[in-house]
Amino acid sequence: DAKTTQPNSMESNEEEPVHLPCNHSTISGTDYIHWYRQLPSQGPEYVIHGLTSNVNNRMASLAIAEDRKSSTLILHRATLRDAAVYYCILRTNTNAGKSTFGDGTTLTVKP
Amino acid sequence: SQTIHQWPATLVQPVGSPLSLECTVEGTSNPNLYWYRQAAGRGLQLLFYSVGIGQISSEVPQNLSASRPQDRQFILSSKKLLLSDSGFYLCAWSVLRGTLLFFGSGTQLSVL
View 1 (cartoon, rainbow over the protein chains, first blue to last red):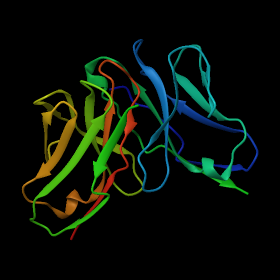
View 2 (view 1 turned 135 degrees about the vertical axis):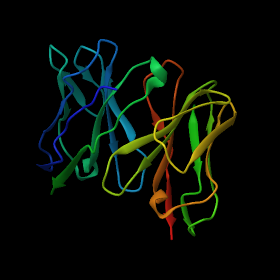
View 3 (view 1 turned 90 degrees about the vertical axis):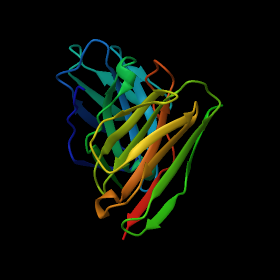
C-alpha cells in the first residue's frame, strides 16, 4: 500500500484558514486521496476525497498537486470544533480497498 | 441510509479471558468490512478485512481472529487476551469496489 506523510501537529487561530499538507510520492494511478478526521474517543469521519482535480464540499477543500504526489486539505475558517487528528490516506477500489493510516496531523485551534 | 453499529463502547477484561466484539452494518449489501486497532496517540492499524461471507484476510499476525458469519456482521475474537491487546478497536465498512470508509464509534478495550 502506498504511504502518506503528514506533519505531526499544527496550530491555527480560530476564524483563520488552515492548510494541512500531505505527501504521497508513491501514489498510483488508481489511488484516490482521502481525508478523515478523528475526535477523541470517536471513530474517524470522512472529510473529503479526490482523484486529480481540486474538490470542494461544505466541510473543506482539497487541493491536489498536478503530479499528484502531494495534496493539501484546506479549512477555510477554523473553528474550535475543527480541532482533531486529520488523516490523509490513499484508497483504491481494487484490492479490497486496504488503506494504511499514519499517525495523522493533530490540529490545535486557539481561540 | 446506511448505519454501522459497534458494541460495546468500553470493555475491561482480565488477561487470559476471551473476547468478542461485534459490528453490524445496516442499509447496504455485500460491503467490505474492516477491523482496525488504534494505540493511544497513534494512527489506525488494519487488523482484518473481509470482502464477503466467510472471507477473512489478516494483515498482522496476532492473538486475534475475525469472522463474518453473515453479510453485514463482522466479529473480532480472541480465546485468551494479552495485555498488549488493549486499545481502541474500530470497525469500518465500504461499498464493494467503493473507496469511502465509514467507521463505527469504536470499543475501548482495557486488558488488566
